[in-house]
Length: 178
Figure 1 (cartoon, rainbow, N blue to C red):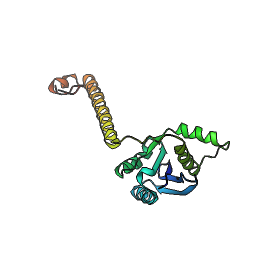
Figure 2 (figure 1 turned 135 degrees about the vertical axis):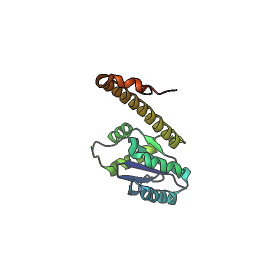
Figure 3 (figure 1 turned 45 degrees about the horizontal axis):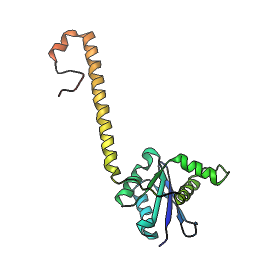
């Protein structure tokens, strides 16, 4: 079986993909998929038609939350992938050509070619759980701070407008009870 390198340029609504064969280093296919389940299923069908999952190297630039759906889908599909620093791809492109062409098609091919030159270090498993826990703890922290902020505001307004009111509501405290 042949090794294939898949570079994906991440965008908000669509992802451009370039598949390069390791045998002759030629572009096998360039496709554009939507950033939704149907688009991901289309990509997975193409990946499964190529080779064994062990012979597939998938890489894309780290683009914050735009790649999140794709990352979760690939992890559920048991596909390995590598998230790449965009600066590395930019410098790689500069080293290969003097042209400053910046299109999604050129970028996805550059990512695939960059994957051919480096050691493949797949993203760690369990991404979904770590991401969910991080999001939930950040949300809780933000909500606790907002609650404290508004309780202090209410207390200040009550102290100025109606100071006799506060003793009737001892439960209004700026910090959560334990």
